[in-house]
Every structure is written in structure tokens, then in C-alpha cells.
Length: 284
Image (cartoon, rainbow, N blue to C red):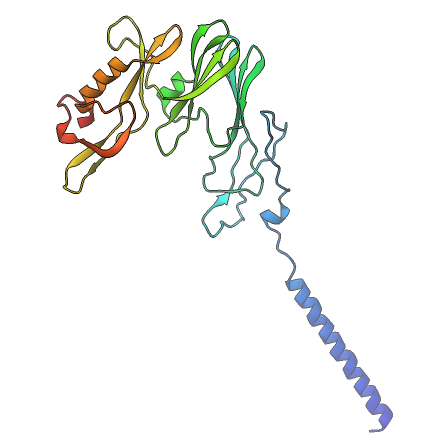
């Protein structure tokens, strides 16, 4: 084979090798194309608003069926925007709005969403709260839903507004807003009352009753059954607002526990169930 022929054969081999190499590169690039997922197609997170107003069309974050759960078991946030307006009394209402979750948010509890809360009197917002650490008025207890929000008027444009809030895993409680002449002057916490006010001690005045916690039972190291001390508190309804009826509370607590240990709950050392009065409902 002459030199010219050898050169032509070598040149062809070079061209074939280059073509094969280029095909391999293109194939590798094709295999490395990014996979489209819920995260790559999601819109940028929207920061929560700083006031009670939210966008007219808030972002809706839903869990994609084809989006895998994270390694920790969390799922994509489920958020259905909502707004509630409750008329408490003539000229007085509360407004609860959800804060849209970021579309790529990951949460453990899809229903653990944040809300804004506002008290509106005569069409004016007299109090607003972004409620970053509270969930208002979402009780699963039918009695609480029927009773709250609770308004105790004390004068023109004045009164006490009680709104239940979620206190999981403990018992739900109520936030009391003391309103004087259309201004919130004090906020404190009360137990959620179990029912409407009635005259518990037959003194001609009505009282509301509720406990700050749930009673729990356990066996101590000696095998004796004990129960936590969770006194039911009684508040008398007066023209000036709710006032703790200490005499009635002490009477009722002794009937339940056989002893009065104060107005606050206590877990230690607990009350021996065997020492409870025989008629105590705590024995059940």
C-alpha cells in the first residue's frame, strides 16, 4: 500500500473516532438533563403580610401527588386560604384570616397554619395580632364553639371579650381582652368555661366555671394511684366584669379533692385517689 493510500485510511479513522467521541458526549449530556419536580417548577416563596390584610388571590400550596415525601416524613404544606368574620355583639366583631404559606413550605401538620386576628368595633380596628404563635377559635369542642367568642358588656363601648385559643397538647384556654371606651387596655388568660353562666351557689349571682388543665392519673413508685391537682375556677359575673369567686372555688375544690392547695394546677406530688371524697367526680 503506497503512502498516499495509507494517509487516506488514517484520515478516515480519525474522522470516525471523532464522530464516536462526539456522540458519546451528546448522549451523556442528554442523560444529565434536570428532572422537573414540584420544587423546580414552584413559584418563589411569598413572605407573610405584616397586617391583617392579605392578597386578594393568595398563593395556594398543595401537595403534588408525584412529589416524594422528605426523608424526615414531612409533607408539602396544605393551605386552603380562609377568612372568618364573627359578629360578637352589635357593632363588635372579630376577623380571622389565614396567612398564605410559602408554596415550597414543608410542615409536619398540614393544619398548623398561622392566622391574623383583629377586633373591630364600630367599623374600626381597635386591636390586631399577627398571631405568630397562637391559633384562635379553632376548638373541636362543640360546647366551646357554641359559647365563644364571649362578650361581657360593662358600659358604653366597654366590656370583656373572651376568645378561645388552641393550647395543644394541653387544654385550650381563653384570652381576655378588656375594652374600655373602644380601647383594649388589658389582656390576660382565663380558663375556657365549660358552659353558660349559672348560679352555682344560689346567691342570686351567676358564675362561669372552668379549669386551666386536664387531670391526669398515674401510679407512684409505691404503686399507689395519684391524680394531678387541677382546680376548677369559678368567676362571678358582675356589672364591672368577671371576678374570681374565691369562696365558691375553695368550696368546690375541697368537694373534688378533699383539700384546697391553691388556685393553680400542680402535678407533684399529686393527690392520692384513695383520699378523694367518696362523692368526688374525680373518682370516676
